[in-house]
Image 1 (cartoon, one colour):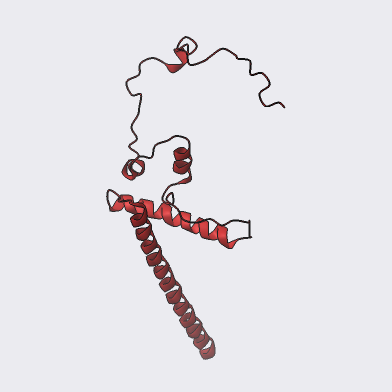
Image 2 (cartoon, one colour):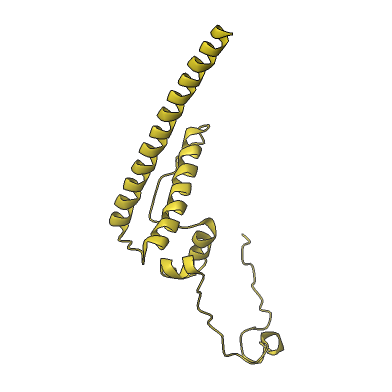
Length: 148
């Protein structure tokens, strides 16, 4: 019984020391990531409205860096990913920015306050005959376009 108790105390001591090491490593990684984010913000000229916004953007940044590291540590795909000026954007925000979307200030995205461009429109867009407005042109002969 005494040897079992000694073993349990010993095992608990080892487990506790491993938890201390693991938590210390997590704190160091978090501090390193915070420093990396601050350097990234400085390099790309980003200043956030407040701590809440910065915290939300930091989380996105951290998730993106983790995704980049996981991709790069996997099987060699012939290329590597790296952190760039888009590192604090979600996938949806990045896709929208590549489709002609103008990036809002980070505070608008985080708070959800997005301006609505056609707030005062009273006519249903489906009721408009776009052919009469000149938005749709007649079918045109494209000739041998794409043919040799």
